[in-house]
Image (cartoon, rainbow, N blue to C red):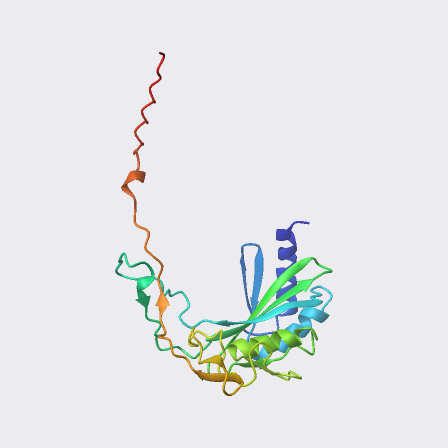
Length: 237
């Protein structure tokens, strides 16, 4: 059975098993199927995805967060070019963000029995990015959800140990959010007099550097050919 056949069967099973759940949508691109679920229905849907024999998603491979602020925009596009190499800077001032559906929690599931994968996505508001934990369904998601909380500030209701997992003790903010400064909030150094590491406000200017612009070279226009090199003369004497 090909991948497309397995995805066809998966779509049919999803439509049948989730017909009573309002707001679920599906999309299929590049050989992958994504199921978007309302946040209030996520835990019920996840229980069906694992427990139903026609779906049988035994494994939760990953849980991650997404920040859709400034989605589709690029800070690297500039209107002017100069030959100053990396001397140009781009302002990283973010426009006013729409708090609705700013964040998303994304789950990657695997069915060993059916040999198929599924991406499940649920959108969360910026003011209260809270969704039910799936640890009661897949215990292995415990550390994944802690990482999404640490880096994006997404909170998982019912998680047994929701605390930071990657950043330092006392870290302020969530470093994968689009409005978190690339230079961070503080810098640290070792103080020889105090004989300890001290934290201080960052002292560098926040900006994003743009690499040198590669200009078009006229030698490579259509129809251009290099002149043949002159052959070196030979002395027969």
